[in-house]
Image (cartoon, rainbow, N blue to C red; front, top):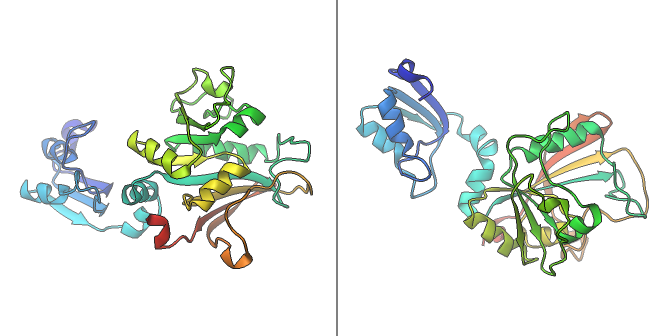
Length: 286
């Protein structure tokens, strides 16, 4: 609609098949038809049965439709969290942490600011900006009192703020906690079970969760096979003692270790950023 009359006779190129249903907005197919679009190119069919059928509706309206262009890149890129959430009926979960080269997320005295470099922290805020929710446990709230907001390079709050989520089965979050301020919306869930929490978030429309909790919560999500992506910021430091990045995760022996497919390794100042995907197999989708 922003193009106005210039759109008439034009080509629309999108990643996902235009929807054919009314949700929070009207059908994309109607908007394209009314704009006078003559040709639509898209990468991936919409797997949502309520929204599918857009391609056929466009063809019936006399609009040329080309599908499957760049499908593999779209599935592996921008659409991956949404497609995964739609398939599994739970949000896509990215577990993000910063650690030393010997895997410590804090020192023996629990000091942790700052293990990662300013470049890594800026990258992490860019990651926060594209998710629907940031999730921690009550232990992290008590230990670090994080605000869990997205901030620009100069420290000012970004326009988009994800939902802040605290898993607090024991009702330990104090009313003075910064996560309860008015900088963004906050949801406190009375559960420590990853799948229960993710079901509640999915029902609220959350499709991508950034897991920023400590070792205990990370271990619970790994044990439940509810981690779809791991992003680690590794700093060239050694601590020896102190909590590790991952707590108990139900992995009794080396033969049970979770294998990761490394997707990228990037240098951020003196840090190294690793993006990897766990190999869960079909069992994780049950």
